[in-house]
Length: 278
Length: 305
Image 1 (cartoon, rainbow over the protein chains, first blue to last red):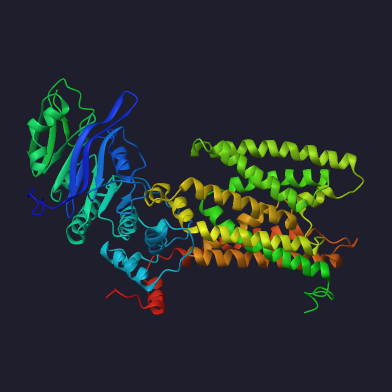
Image 2 (spheres, chains in turn cyan, yellow; image 1 turned 45 degrees about the horizontal axis):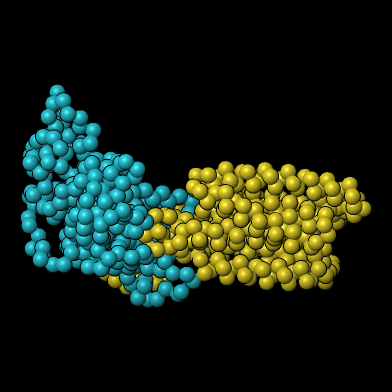
């Protein structure tokens, strides 16, 4: 299903070079290296609690690392880097707060600045353009808290993109969405990566919904990561080496199943795509 | 007209002072209140009124101006809450509770000392229920200037603060100093509470802070509309309360009149109740279509082919 991206010769948007981070004795990132390129859709796959959110916070600079280098657009990342858009895992907007979708998107333009600078026609045009791009025009003037999960997700994506970042990070955006919304959001993000020349980096504990669109994968487990195209990574030999014990990768009806040998614990395998053979 | 506005209402100096002071505190509370409700910090707002009480009672005991006492108390309380609650957000409620309890205990002490040591009566009444009819013009000037400063500070931090209130993570990702803008807000809230205390009394200033704002949030779809509505409702409630209190000299058989703060808070609560009627809320929560059509008519959105 996956094709080798045509633009793989381009300079990477994000580079992890030998990055390590541990909380006490627990290694979250153990000499992790990978790259992410513009126009590509990259999945950060790993089971719950493996450190996907922490890795995204490292990219944002809200979590420090202990060693290694992180470069964004070729330069070492500094605090307050505005070239990264971020959609966190949990945003709960109260239905009682009168904030319209378009207001929230506009905050992506100027919420980092002090003062009440007047928004220009150009600002409004960009907000409208982004709302259109995520197919949110029909609820642009509705309260954010009145929208469904999938609709809110679109508005959050528009907010993260309105400042025209080169890298868009999304933390488990598909969790808590119904299957149809999952498909719509995945298609939307794939389209955004391709047409807006943005590197989309999305974390998920379930990779099957992403298989048709993923250009690359960063597979994270036990602090170690394997990265490459899906065909390069989601293979028995690569994942066995990553897990430190044998796993089989089965393709069934276009879905991937990662199967552990009898007797091995499967707790650390991504959920929904694991089979315990006893 | 004379039925509503008794003769002498507009020429009466205390009444005119009260109308000006009431409008100032209603405007400041109206703006601060909207953000307080958006941030779900009503409990913190209430705790600040308790420390304002302590400040006001303490000021009366040592003979300092009550406004200085209210403001000093509330700002010190905000500092204490910020200091205790700094460790983790989850402890914010506990920090608020501790400060609230300590402050109330101290208020009881100061009010007792006032009652036993001083010949002046009515200190307790003044601290708890305000002195909108008896403030002098210099206090009004100080209140106006302080109010303007609060509104300016809020204007500076508004957008980072708003995003931090909706999603601290998204604000941090944009480079906002979430803690700093939060601290700036709680101090602004403390000053707003201190200012309201002089008008409607320390324990009732929560009502003026939360009531009009909560009402406005129910009825509007954008924050700008909410702020305008909140300020308007606050001014209407305050002025109507003053009018009722003035008129009540004729209602009360003993001709003492009834307390203005009770009228103001009563009207605030009444407005909140009315805003809960389903028909009024429908427009604010309308999802699209009809809303969009009116929006299109006004703005002729570019780019929406």
